[in-house]
Image (tube, one colour):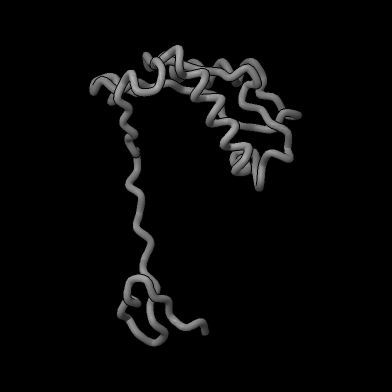
Length: 124
């Protein structure tokens, strides 16, 4: 958060997603909020506190299914508008905090050379 403040990057934190039948207690929610408040960042909590039915997740309380993730992202986008303005009003730049690795290309069986782009090695 310090780096962001020094470089003019706006940070808006929020609550992690989780199961609706396992709500985040007030103390935990306040602890998450305090991280952002203490760092001089904004904080946004959705009306549902980012809690969804278990059926909205595909493998853990951290991973919403694609349809649920789209709905969650839209809810965040709408809630952010009062904080950052309507689309197109301010340029938005997405900054990755970690480089995204390029997956290795498949290799031909028995060879250390990568397969040509657009082709796939024979299945074994």
